[in-house]
Length: 181
Image (cartoon, rainbow, N blue to C red; front, side):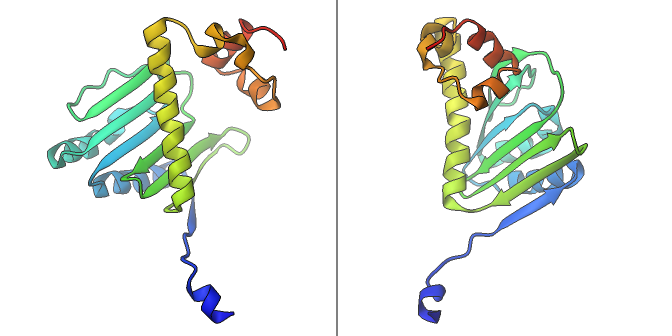
């Protein structure tokens, strides 16, 4: 049994509580980046300006998706946004060098920010893919002038998740225009 367990590599999950703790860990991850960073957030990204400047000098690109409007400019920061006015700050997802991810959100029922940090390969891949897909969908919407839900109403599968997500501006707008199956 000990020979089997010795071959298993542990990939722990670190849970964080508190906005300042989470932003501090995010900043540390950014400063440690050497290759590429992907971010999905509705936070004011200027709170990371010094880290983005540091990454710019290192030649590290940062790709950001947000539903919120951002007026931020830096040569190494590429922002893909729907341009909605900020409503409330609730999310930060960060993938660094395809090696680690930080996923955090604000829970209004508990009035606290929580996060999970891991180097688990599967979680890194899932979060990185999620951010890429958000960017692809935003670019497609910008290119064709409407979302996939507007172009192809049958994409909606009428799940509980979709109904819960329909309170978000982009999903609500698109689902209201889609037909029933």
